[in-house]
Image 1: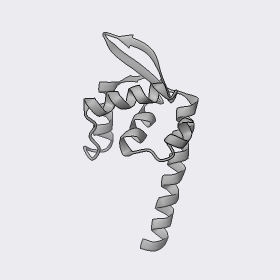
Image 2 (image 1 turned 60 degrees about the vertical axis):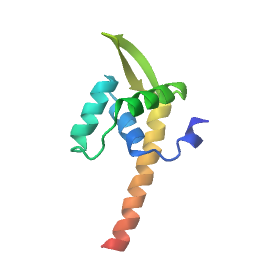
Image 3 (image 1 turned 90 degrees about the vertical axis):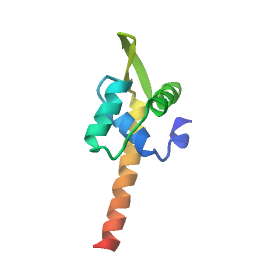
Image 4 (image 1 turned 60 degrees about the horizontal axis):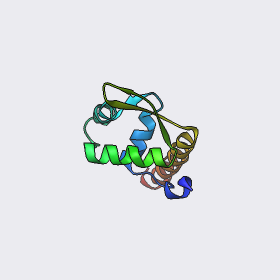
Length: 102
């Protein structure tokens, strides 16, 4: 089941699924992640396209069209569930850290 495999997302996985709440192709995703994170997270083409392929196989995203040879993807309900679970995990970690650090 995809959920067990994806219990904890990497930063790259998290940002890709997050940005696919709106239809995008791989190059758009790479550029938006770079801008959103102010260059902190960089995803190369190899990583991007292997993750998109993996996400598609695990039904976390679907290909909605091909524009000028570019595949356009959108997150599925399962993908949304996975990112929401990971988001709650990250929020819990921040809360734990705040309790110790502040």
